[in-house]
Image (cartoon, rainbow, N blue to C red; front, top):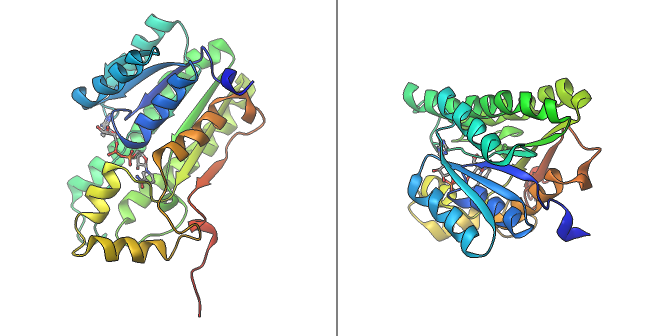
Length: 262
Ligand SMILES: NC(=O)c1ccc[n+]([C@@H]2O[C@H](COP(=O)([O-])OP(=O)(O)OC[C@H]3O[C@@H](n4cnc5c(N)ncnc54)[C@H](O)[C@@H]3O)[C@@H](O)[C@H]2O)c1
């Protein structure tokens, strides 16, 4: 039963050349979904698709910039032309700047909003007509724990991800009657290039920074990208058929823990 969860479903996954998106693409392909790898980085995106095909899976790479309307439209049209339907859209592509609000430049604000928030809006907007026509679909937005609680140094990122959480609820409310479910996942700290390059690299003592971070995690470790992929399998499949508008925290307990008070 479990191996049939998303078999033959067509899934577009943005930002799937690296980290969480790549893990979702590999897990979906492993369960025999047909995956459309959409990434701005041609080299890493092609690498993900090659890896899937090498292991006998079905994948198509489409170079995509989620902040460009033409690019998102072309992605959706290419996927439909090839596979005739879109069952799942994972809006995962994103970036962050780890800097205070005061030190954030206007360019960093614009770029964060264009990719992390507008990119999600456009993904949803341009798959909806196809999903409505089919009468079914599951949209999964990768938000963040920083989208539901404040994290000093991630204020602008939080503003974008908080927008994703509410956009998810609005899209779910508008489209449930068409058989379309819209949910988001709020990951905690997941071991990916983004966490390493944006969060850990600027710290003077990498090990001390990780130890400090782990004090906030009841599970006492960082997350794996595959653990976010497991949540995306649940939300993409009929196992979650009565779940919509939900923000699923996959965060090792971070968001439910106030920290050691004494
Ligand atoms: N890693 C974490 O701890 C963590 C925590 C919470 C949320 N997230 C979110 O998860 C998502 C994936 O993050 P990750 O950690 O895997 O990062 P990552 O940097 O490893 O991967 C991000 C991918 O997105 C692609 N991308 C960037 N801009 C793009 C654009 N304009 N168009 C298309 N693709 C683009 C990159 O090329 C890259 O392949 C992001 O939305 C991020 O905000 C990550």
